[in-house]
Amino acid sequence: MTDQVRPPEVDRVAASRKAVAARRARASLKRDIAMRVVTPQEVLRRAFADPHSPAGTLRVPEFLTALPAIGEGKRDRILAELQISPVKRLGGLGTRQREALAAWLDRRMPVRGHRRTRSSLVVLAGPTAVGKGTVAAHIREHHPEVLLSISATTRAPRPGEVDGQHYYFVSDAEFDRMIAEDELLEWATVHGEHRYGTPRGPIDDAILAGRSVLLEIDMQGAFQVRRSEPTATLVFLLPPSWDELVNRLVGRGTEGAEERARRLRTAKVELAAQNDFDFRIVNDDVAVAAQQVVDLMQASAR
Image 1: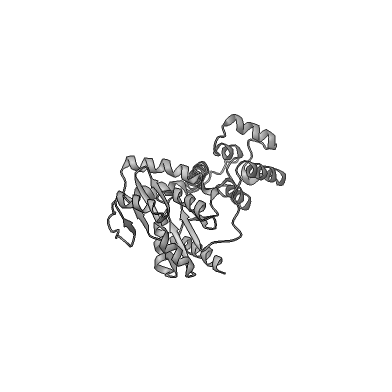
Image 2: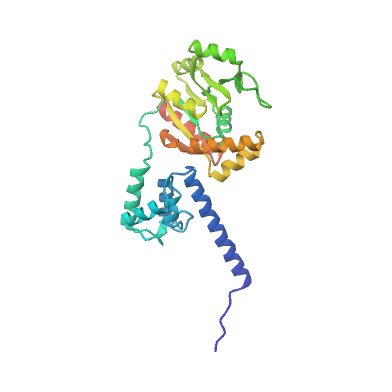
């Protein structure tokens, strides 16, 4: 009788570590779907492009229950309707099943199409700690042809911030005056505390002079700009993943535990609004993300 050959111990350890890493990657992807860091359509694209990727190896039932408002009962009805086996993985779906799942997603969670025309006025917004300020600072340093609007705010300066360079730090009374005299393109109360607003005059002057203008503002302000300036291009800045967004918020160390928890709750709501923007850019690399924003602005000038 021939003895069975056992794999070397090192191979079994490596295989176990690889399996654990794969499970963690799928768990992270499910969090990203649930938190709307990534659209379900993008997950399907990744799965179909690479069946061995975390998206490709994600089982269809797990994918469906990661979507908002889908529990086990609704999940099972969807699988039956689409005629997809519960043991199927996204990367292993056949052509008919891929088309059926993609069509169902587009009906349930449509993604806003890109604008055909772009404005010289670009609004950059996104969830807390995504790095909007860092991307805007990179554009300021490397693209002096772009005017970065300076917001007015009623909050106190943070360490290193300079009045007139990072923000116009004003009193509540002065902010009230600016609202009353229609000197703000938009304004909003952020996180239930301080008010932020965008002075209208410098933006109007820059656009009349043929310059591109970038507004780095909060979500409420972005939608106000859309109402007051419908031609403005709205860009949503995304984190690479939900876990990375949490790490960035914790890592910057400017908020306590209670404030971090509140901001993360707000971030969930903000991420859900990304489909209302014209373009989405992932801030995985600051220089790359900044260049993508500038490319949108330069395209509008052509």
